[in-house]
Length: 140
Image (tube, rainbow, N blue to C red):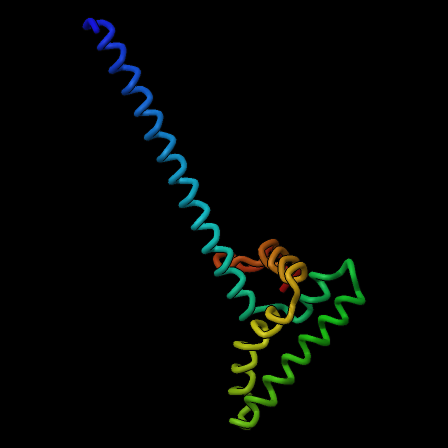
């Protein structure tokens, strides 16, 4: 291999190496963005569960009032279970209310099938962000 061929070979190798590293950095940045978005989404869902609006089921399932009624019944059942369980521990209304707010929403999510859970998550991510709060005033 003469010097000119060697030089061209090294330039091509360097160019390929630079492109490869550039692609790796781009992929790494995309992965980091995905991780950050996942974290933000999880955070928003958790915080929505602590700050949900009273009619979130009716809003989320507004396209299917019968299902919304069924899910409202499920949510009420979760509330009653928590009241009964935690009410036995304390007659203090504030203590019971705090216990309910931390458990009812989580219990409700576990009672949904995959399709309805996904629909609820979509609703939450479209209407609420832990960082920015509610997306519109009428959703509070």
